[in-house]
Length: 258
Ligand SMILES: O=C(O)CCC(=O)C(=O)O
Image (cartoon, rainbow, N blue to C red; front, side, top):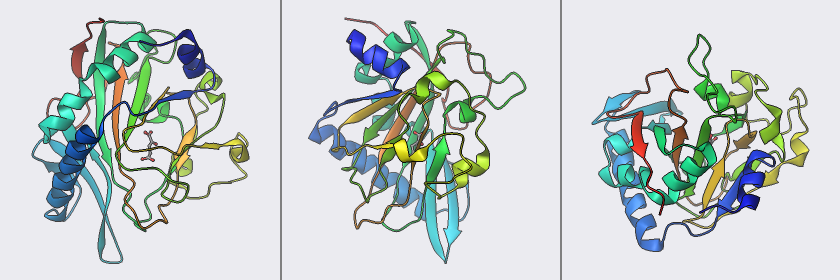
């Protein structure tokens, strides 16, 4: 399924993009699920579980902000089915080098126009390894693959993903939670040069794959359009010892290569 160039790119540069991995009909169904999640969030007054998913919510100037919906597939069966789709799982299995993978993430990000949601510079290892033996790099190659489906077009001003090239080989930089929360794209205290970042413009249906050490961020959506992404993340079995919220989270999937 993957070329040796894909693998090399993943483990050195840090990411690759598979254009139009999901078709227009599938993207329409994913958007329907996101709309249901949004409607559900509107009935909630604070962060919490609802129908098998975990909603992280904030209120700013009287408006509800959806920061993320964790284990979105817990309440949206179609999203759950995308999480076990071989177009994602076979690639993750090949990169992790194991036929059994553990799905840790099924996450919906919304970025509604002007909602101020940002994801400052970070590596996903920060969210996997919370210390106290919560994470072990079992395969010695990071043991985690993040996938991100563009649900809307990602344009330069809709809060697109940005990646720091070649950060995949840097290991855990121990970035701070304050970096993740920061909306400062060019913070001079960062231990890398953020001006080298590559901005990803993508069409709905394009899918990004990246590793746990790849430094990335996305900033405010200043456009007039939604910028939604659907994230599925997979670990090498035994790497994770944490319990993730959501009904059925951390499920094991067996991948049959064709
Ligand atoms: O929605 C975004 O832009 C953030 C994505 C992200 O940071 C991640 O997948 O780790």
